[in-house]
Length: 158
Image 1 (cartoon, rainbow, N blue to C red):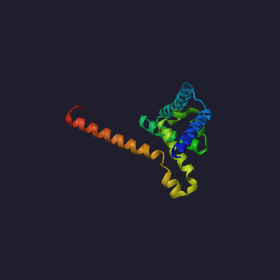
Image 2 (image 1 turned 60 degrees about the vertical axis):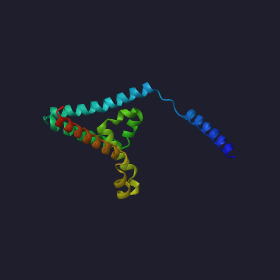
Image 3 (image 1 turned 30 degrees about the vertical axis):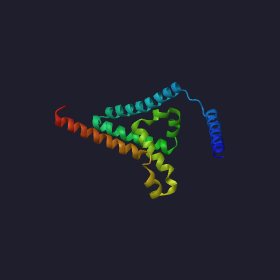
Image 4 (image 1 turned 90 degrees about the horizontal axis):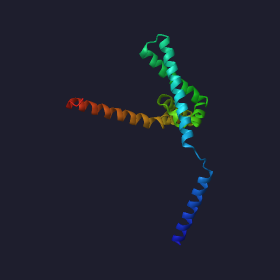
């Protein structure tokens, strides 16, 4: 009896996998790479354009970079709020994950998604669901790199 259930389960799983494969759209790797390249390139071009505008306005190199960063984050927040950034992501895939705009999008999209659960248990608890691990491991990796650099400097290797 047990063997019969196992055989039926295997057949059911095989049929399910065949069904999933038949309804899953076939993706072209080259096409997706080109779309990601274009999307990421346009986001970076927008950032470079902002940087050049702020330099042209005599903000100075450091302040121009600061205001460019702020504008990139603000643009990402606004586009996410109006539902435009998800459209960009569906077209460009990984190309939309340019660090500064992708990170802002992940925080804002999570806040919008969990808004219905309230300020504390929705937004407050879950806003960093996606961005939290990125922050955690980014900080951890930079701490380890700094520690390694410090040790190598003490030893005289660097």
